[in-house]
Image 1 (cartoon, rainbow, N blue to C red):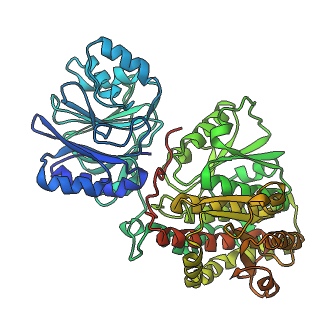
Image 2: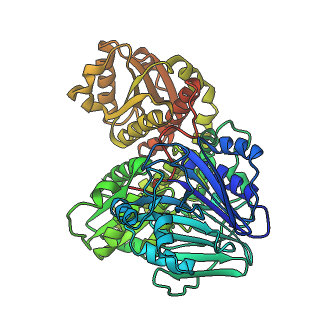
Image 3: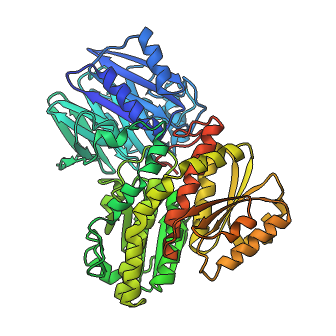
Length: 612
């Protein structure tokens, strides 16, 4: 969750660290700090709040050095304050360390270290690490790190500097991502993800679990905890600076909403072969034919990716006739079940580092199952550890509330559904072609919805002061109701719930009054369940609920039943989630702006959940 940055080289480290921290702030922004080595002296500055607060303080307290580390925190152990901010130190404040993860056995380690004379200042689990390393230090910093980490239980991505070995930056990873940017021989930048690096280099090395890198001005050495030397290949990041800039938008979230015609197109490019009536998913290769023969599918994911997985369940079952279950990664990893070789397991993650999803993946692999990834971030841990998979090609997503990754995930799931339906012969070729043509039109239809953003903005002004919302959908659009409610909760702090529309009368209907706006997904006028949704609208209206409907263009009758209506273009029913979610994303965004919320950095949240 936290952001880590480190630099060693010939340049002044402070501008590089601050730039990196600004890039990584979406990972955590409770507190922030830096520490530098200048010759053999360690200096530091840390504060509660965001990077801007640190920058202000650095105008008065100027730090110097061309070796340093920085950290932007998402608090786990200990309140967000200056003492608990990273870096954390040993007793002598000669060793500084930044950490992303959780040390699960920190209590017992802390007790043992206190018995050996160590004095602790913070409430963090992290502080045991610099003390533990210092306890084992006998003139060899790498050896001390290895010995200390052998005792640690939990997850960590760490970077540390030590004034007694002032030309060395050491980083280590187990469960929390770390990437090394290779600027030149003897000049390196380490970070939690490539967004903090690509200003300086696109050449990167991804650390795997149990690996430690020693970076010096003479070069780089990567070893295991048991000191086995490892040769790692340099990879090239394909993102560019424009993709991680706001490009004139007031927030990353709005920019990423408006990028969706492009990102959906990128997910389709080279894969949707309409003339051939086929789908090409090269990342799955020959596995696609084997997946088509399995008895069922299990999908594990978290948050917005879980909602995309639910859409996938409807797609796989309704079109490919393939029984599917969708599991929360946080629950699946602890289930006492046997992994079934006749099942195709999928994991979905934007970052490719989601801790619970990653552990679900490893559970499946340990059980000798085949697990496939739907991931956005190239080179991420999940992407590297899955049997095979499909990239989203959505580009970096900086806004904490996921938007374009959801539509890209659903797009890939739609492609996979059609590929499986063709191989399983569950729909005629003519229907397959019709569905493919409809999918091909989605980017331009999304663009047409975005052109109407001012209508949604006006709705947001009208409804931004309500404190409770209900979202209702059926079939393919029940997961979209969940996603719409989640977006509103995440960034505006309004209590919102998503339900299958028919379940409203099994409890939530007791909440309906004029102070409870209800957003109803009422598209697909030719669908068998459309009339059922209309019945639900009548039930809400009878109780004086305020109704905002998302409907299909040409449906004039619905205006007689609802307070507000927003129209989307007509499409094949299985693709309505890709269109319905766009106005819901915009509604959440504009309501949050009206309420004065920090859209890109909502309270208590971070972009990549790398701790349990």
